[in-house]
Image (cartoon, rainbow, N blue to C red; front, side):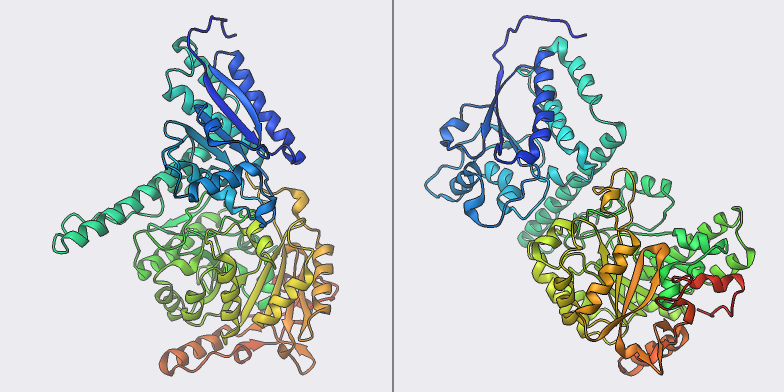
Length: 605
């Protein structure tokens, strides 16, 4: 128990703002206020005043307080300025008014929690506007994007504020109660959440430090281009902490920005128990497929990401660049090491392990954004030189790179939202012009001549209502295939829940509704185990049969010819007949892996 004592200091004055018209956040507000009041009872010297964001205030009222806290959690307003709370609009106007001194909030500390829900630019920029008016930050302006379980976000935010206040302000608490209060606050947040927050804060700090170093270097080079002796060494993408986390999770970390990992379907296939949907749809041998990425960094923070956002983020490459051959050699070595380790597990078939060592396929879809890697073209060429097929997946935010990347065996873009608001809500892209970039990427896919795929990760409550919007995007991109795949729940730390995972029957129904809106496509394949359905362009249906499988050797020939004289790689030229047991509505429901048990002739792919 905390000892009672007589207050001998003037309490710090704290203003807490939230939208009282938004009843959906009442429970979160109560959590935050309860923690504050509990700490006040235990010795925190705060005098708290709660304001409505819709209340008209003059900036002189702000000046009466030491701290300004803005709770914008789940603020989901439209882009019309009239719909935003009065206080937010007022602060934005103050920042843009040249008549207002930009030190009116000097000496005041501020923090805002906006979780990125909706498209509220005012919320995103609020803390930056306040800092522009002279205030200092209690927490990072982008704290709401911290990759922790959303149910803890508001708690972690106020705990971080209180801890910073107690540690850094002598007026916040009597010295005798300081450690007791800090211990109490630590107990409110699980250790796993605290660790994830610590890693994220350190990464953001390192990113900003590096950016400042780059700016400083440019200034120095501008002053004296001959003095290049002190050019700072490029930073590695993977920090020591992140490397340790990835290795514990089973990743084979390659160099400073790449990784491989044995996927669960590769493990299943090695045991002879089945293969993934890529086998059913395209004839890929799951055991000999290397799931990898040459860039752990990404330009999105997707809600359904199974990396839980602990990987780096960025709009451009700002790290050390590993040589493409080193990346390739490192991936192959790590994949074979992981295969050898798994070979001793129960049920693994020795002939499958030997077959897997050949590494016939590479799925560049592990995590991150592979196309960000500056030497992606060289890397893809190395794959093809070694007879390895390439399945390149991008997040539709880098149109120029999509246009310039060389032919791959199969090229994907992820389409997670059919509207600007829907895309931001689910993918949470870093680019301000994310929607324009997305549409440019859709247009760029249309110009590619090899096999192309639009991949839709379907999430209940987010992107399964607007079938017409998805159909519009398909008609614009004209891909070879449209993959519909249900979201996979990735456990604790995921910002979504099992309720957001659609049933297989719902995926099939979505596919039927989409198919009804597309004249040139039909449902061709299904894989119930992966909760996935494939729509295929009708040009792949001839002689009364679907031709969705890939002739991998033929692709290598076509790639070599493209490299020699620029002859385009045509999708139909290396597409072969789909086995009957992989076709939609066959009683086996896409269990193409039955062939691997001797039920038929196993394909060579």
